[in-house]
Amino acid sequence: MVVTFALPKGALLKDSIQLLQRVGFDFSAFLDGNNRQLQIADPTGQAQALLVRSQDVPIYVSYGQAQFGIVGEDVLQEKTADVAKLVDLKFGRCYMAIAVMQCSPYRSVMELPPHCRVASKFVRSAARYFRELDLPVELVPLYGSVELAPMTGMAEAIVDLVSTGRTLRDNGLVEIEFLYESTARLIAHPLSWRLHDRRIHEVVHQVRRCLEHGM
Amino acid sequence: MVVTFALPKGALLKDSIQLLQRVGFDFSAFLDGNNRQLQIADPTGQAQALLVRSQDVPIYVSYGQAQFGIVGEDVLQEKTADVAKLVDLKFGRCYMAIAVMQCSPYRSVMELPPHCRVASKFVRSAARYFRELDLPVELVPLYGSVELAPMTGMAEAIVDLVSTGRTLRDNGLVEIEFLYESTARLIAHPLSWRLHDRRIHEVVHQVRRCLEHGM
Image 1 (cartoon, rainbow over the protein chains, first blue to last red):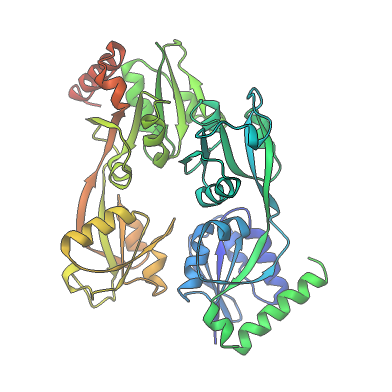
Image 2 (cartoon, each protein chain N blue to C red):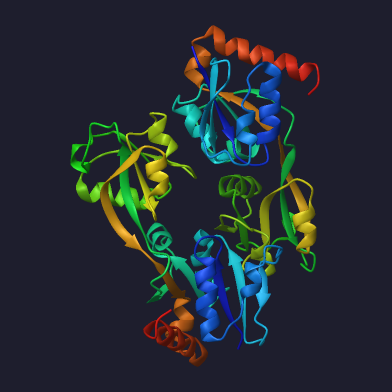
C-alpha cells in the first residue's frame, strides 16, 4: 500500500519534510525552487506526497485522497473537517492573538466598544471567541494583510496569527489578548485510522518515536 | 480631498498602476520589489493607495476606506459586496471555465454524473452555474492548486479561472465549458458615487478618456 501525505505550502513545509525524512520518506524535491510538481513519489516507491495550500490539507485528508496530512492547529480550528488529529509535531509554533493600534484607547478586550469592527482571516476562531465572551462585534473577513485594517481605520482590532511579532511591531500594532497556541499536527483520514490499517499505525508510531528522540 | 485607491496584489497590479499613472497618480512604488509598505501616498499628495489581496478590494471599498478599487470581475462575481461597478478597464482578460482530465469519459457538462464532485476556489460562481443548469453536484471548496483535485481523483471536474490555458495543459486537463469572461473593473464606494462628489466624477471621467484613447 502506498501511503499519501498532504503537505502544506509555506512556513511548515521545510520542517514537515525533515520530519518525514527521519521517518524514512524523502519528499525533499518539493524544496527545490524549480519544482513545479504538486504530486511526487518517494524514491522508495512506498509513499507519495501532495503539495497543497495549508487550508486544503484537511480537505484532501477528509476525502481520503491522502491518508495523512500535516497542518497547523490554526487551520484545524478554523475548519470543521472530519479528520483524526493524531500527533502534536511541536514545530511551527505561533499563536492567535487580538491586537489594536498602539494609539488605540483600548488596552484589553473587555474595553472594546460593543459592535466595533474586528478584522480577521480566521473568522470562525474570532466569532467563537467573542461569542464566548458575549461581546457582540462586527467581523470583517479579510484574505490577507490584516494589519492594514486598523491602520486605515476600517477596524478597531484584529484577530491574527503571531509568530515573531515583527509584523505587528512594524505596523504600530500591539497585542491585547492571547487566544490559543498553534503548532503543526499530524492528521489522518478517520476511516483509515479506525480500520487499524497496519501501515498507517506504523507511520504514526515512527513519527512519535522521532519526536521523543528530539527533532 | 485625498482620493484613496484599493489596488490588488498580483496579476492586475502592473496594469492598474500604469492606468493610474496616465490619469495622473503615481503609485509605482508598489512595483518596487523591496517595497514592504501597504499604504502609500501619491507624490502630489492628491491621492493615496492601499495594496491588498484582490478578494479584499471590494471590502475596503464597500467600507469606504477607499473611494475606488480595481479588481477582476471574477472576484466581484464571487463576493456580494455593496460597490458600484463603474468602468470595464479591459485589461486582465481571462475567463471562468469548467475542465476535466483529458482521460475523463465526459466531454460536456450535461454528461457529468449527478452528485459528482466539482472542486473550485470560486464556490459561489460554481454553485450558481450548476443550480441554473439544475445539475446537482457536490462542490469541494479549495484555496489553491485546484488542478490537483481531478489529478488525485478527488473531483471529476473543476471550475477555475483560465488565462493562457497553460496550467490546464501542463496538468493534463481539458476545458469542456465556458462560464463567463472576466476583466479588471474600476469600482467605487456607492455612497461617494451617489453623492456626486466632484473629485470622484473627475477621476472616473479621466479613466474613461484614457481607455478611449487606448491603453
